[in-house]
Each structure stands twice: as C-alpha cells, then as structure tokens.
Image (cartoon, rainbow, N blue to C red):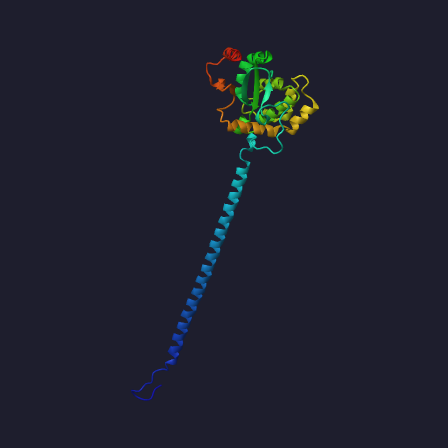
Length: 276
C-alpha cells in the first residue's frame, strides 16, 4: 500500500505464515506416513519370522518322525524282528527249542553248527565235511545240532536266509531236515542273488527230497510258519557274539577257526572224545 512519498506498508504477513504452516503440515504428514510404513514393515517382518520359525518346527518334527520310522524298521530285513508266535519245528532241542538235531540222541559227542543257507563259507564247509559228518552221525558217534542264521539277509538285504531257514524247519516237521539241508547247500545261489527269497524256488527244490513236497510242506513254506523261530535263532546267534558263519563247535572249540582242521582230524577228535 502506497501512503505517499517515502512511506510504504509491508505486505500482510499472514500470507507467509500460511505457506509456512502448509510446509510444516506437509512435513508432518510425510513423517506420519513414514512412521506408518515403518510400523507396517515391522509387522510384516514379525509375521515372516513367525512363519519361518513355524516352518522350521514343522520340518524338525517331520524329520523326527522320519527318523522314528527308520529306527522302528531298522533290522527288520535281517529277520531280527518278526511278528507272530514263535513256532519251533518238530523235535527242536535246547534253550527255546532253537537247535535242529541230526544223528542219534545216544551219541556221546555233539557238534554245534551255526549256519546260513546263503553263506558261501557255510557251503564250502558242508561240501568238504559232509561225507565225514554223515559217516559219524549214521554210526552213532556224533550228533549235530544245527542253528539257522540270517546273517546274509542282514548284510546284503533280502529274505533268502530267512525263507530258506523257514523251509528247512518245515522239512524238519516232515522228518526230512538233513536231506533238504544238503539240497539247499547243493543249490545255493551266489551270495548277492536272493533267489531263496522265492518260496516257489524252495518248494521246487523240495522235489529233490523224496516225499517232502506235500501240501503240508507247501503251506508251511508259503505261510512262513517258522519265521519268528528263525528270527529268535538269529537273535541267539547275535547275543552269542560268534565271529561269523559258519561257527562249528565241538565242545567249546570252534573247529572252523582251526586252520589245521581237516575231516580226518575231526573224525579223530570225535573218536578220542568218545573213548573218554
């Protein structure tokens, strides 16, 4: 406003104050928006952490469940755990009826043999000593107590050791154990071939033993009647801490570990023991 020469009036200050207030309001609004955004981000971060922790817990629980299942099933392939009652074969002897006897009960000397029908070393022992063992058992000088083991199932996988042992126990029910025992070793597959897991193969081999392939024998093999008994025999082997299969004991001496042992030496040992 012009009041004359040399006199001026400054513009009203309310205009400047209005702009300043608007600037302050804008800044305040921006800070508030920033605060809101930061709070939203914190909330999102907390939610994400919660989800990560929750997922981690689920993963841990799932892993624990898997480990539990694996642990629960560990050892089942080797026949160490079999469901059902333990049915010993006819005439089985010893603690828990785990020994299958061959030979005359009156024989003074006893040979205890732990064998696996899938075990190559067991086959080698049987083929080398079979004539002598037959001679000594048939003459009444020696009785043999066979204990059946599933060591190869446990080491290589499969069920051939168990199934063939069950079939041999079924043959014992029919009074044909010794003959079928020899047939199984004569027809043993390679160690890595689980052919004895096939019950049809075991039944076919029974045809080599006169009078063994009967409906009763077939049912016993197919039903796994003695599977739990085989498992119990294998447990006894493990508890005995034997070095492996075959384990062949004459008294307390493991003759299979004696590198100087021969069929002739075994015959002499039996004869000398019987004279005492």
